[in-house]
Length: 415
Image 1 (cartoon, helix red, strand yellow):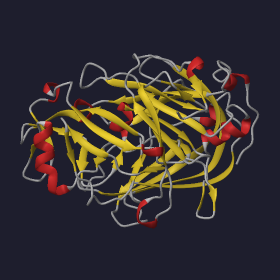
Image 2: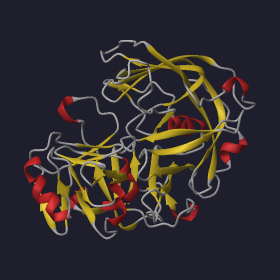
Image 3: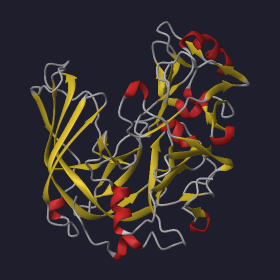
Image 4: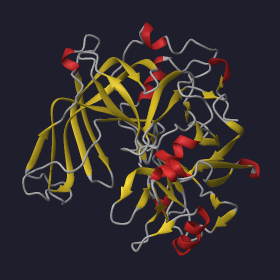
């Protein structure tokens, strides 16, 4: 890992209160790509690059100059015939604040090995991150420069016409690992900040402001490294133990036991869902709710939804007509048997537009498994203490758009 000196600019966001913190403002494109992200400002061009902020990933990378995206082959590890130059990219050779690049062999895999991303160097730089609320923060850290991505994606057009979007960079915020089963390759932003003294503990919190008015409007929020902002939730913040990944896999990210799902007072069975534990993963665009497949029809009826001929649940009408007061309620059991319920507005799940063949507004959730992605993150206040292997949940979505972290409300305590 590259070592570096923490500059005054990085300290600017960490001396506001008694607990040193560094924050990054967040967006969630409601009804669009549905990613939890921040906008990185390229120091050399002032152009912005969308960076996914991902609880299910460890590392920070962004594409550099002359990077290539490859596709056209659906076999594992196979390079296809299609290539395109990645735009936008981080122009580190021309950044006035970037360090000299150092050799750093990086290799990252996403989406069940559907995407492989590689690179050969890393740099330190002073990055500005901005959100749709007009807020910004400055962070000094290390980033891996990726130069090549191959996607397991066929070329259906036969003309190498791009058919899907892809991430321009990922900032992983999962725990930093040094253990027999897994070591984080890095760069790991929060660990860099901890080693540099910009934060004092491997603690973080993430929240979003209240839901915007329109289906197409953008949610805004923050992730805070080094502290828990107790002003950004309502009710109790309840500690929930982290558990092992399902099926004996490597525990990478934040896993918890399944909550009880209820709608309008009707609770649903989760005894036969695929995964016995649930990943909290802001980098995933939809939620998998732990409701048994056999209860799909009952679940849809309780929520005022319909099930199409393929078993897909949706809203029978325009996305804008979804009531604002209908919620999907998730009750988690925490330490000492304490309970906490996170209510997710049904409108949060609306994708843009209506399926023209069915007249149904598609929703970004499924049932029969358990994963809490970007929609969950907009409604749930999340905190984590990696050293204690503990997370905490409360009802989020209560602060006004543009709300900043409150230094007087930040502690190192999860509850």
